[in-house]
Amino acid sequence: MPIIVNLDVMMAKRKMSLNELSEKVDLSLSNLSILKTGKAKAVRFSTLEAICKVLECQPGDILEFVAD
Image (cartoon, rainbow, N blue to C red; front, side, top):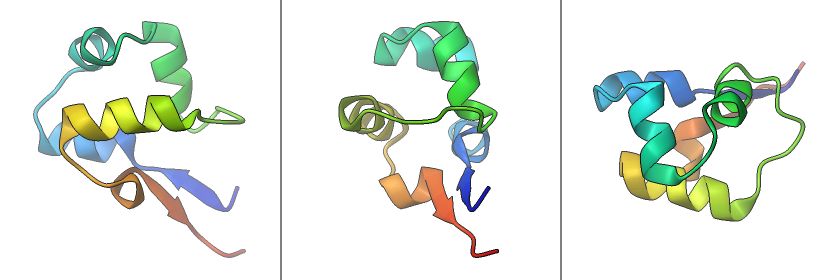
């Protein structure tokens, strides 16, 4: 898949667990886990915005395009 999700990298840099991020962005643990593992088919801008606010990062820090 050409879109790589680096959510786990940003969480590690901020020393934040999946449970803590889930609570702060008000997203279920299972949905956040699907996003973190790269299995999500789509991401709402509102979700991406909430994650970026909590992790103090830019969308490009979380999502990366890699050409085949």
